[in-house]
Amino acid sequence: MHESSSMLMMFPRLGLTQHVYKGYNLLAGELSPVRGASHQGERGGMPIKAEMRWFYPIDWTQLSNYVRFERAGGACQRCGRPHGEIVHVLPDGRWYDETRQTWRNHRGHLARRPDIEEAVRMRQTRVVLAAAHLDHNPGNNRLKNLRGLCQRCHLIHDRPHHLARRRITYLLRRALGDLFLGSYSR
Image (cartoon, rainbow, N blue to C red; front, top):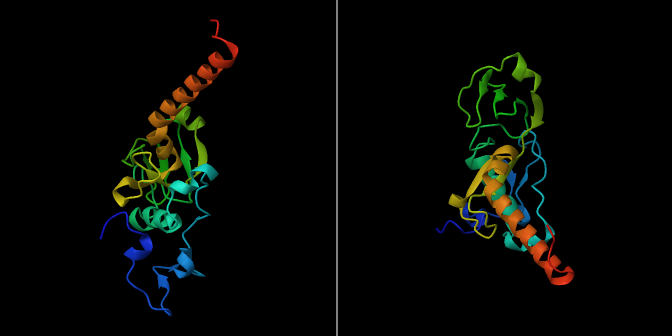
């Protein structure tokens, strides 16, 4: 089966009375947790801009849930931060893993404890996983192109793309200014 196939087609054919798969309700093309079976700290999906909705498949909710919770196990695939948990973080990317009672670095490996100076800069944040497109193309929804990343790792992954888009935006604004207002004086 091709990787870009619909997630609903990846599940085995289910009878009319059998509509639950691993704690999810598969009726009406929606992947919503069955009553009593929910992911810890899970909230609604990530917001998608209205002009970008047409790039995403109709079963994006199912695909995103599969990538974030089934394949990634409810933790960031880069740093290991657990979805929905409130974690203590430092500006350099280190975070405190409550389950293992240890500090981890930005890649999820063991890290040294912060000293007093570093501990002052500690803050708390709630981890929210998102299904990130590795090639920045929302139309490419193949499983090998999607990763479950926390908000920090997702922003770091998208930084070069965001900087390139920002440069294009500045150049377009400048071109419009030149077109209608004359050239800029420095």
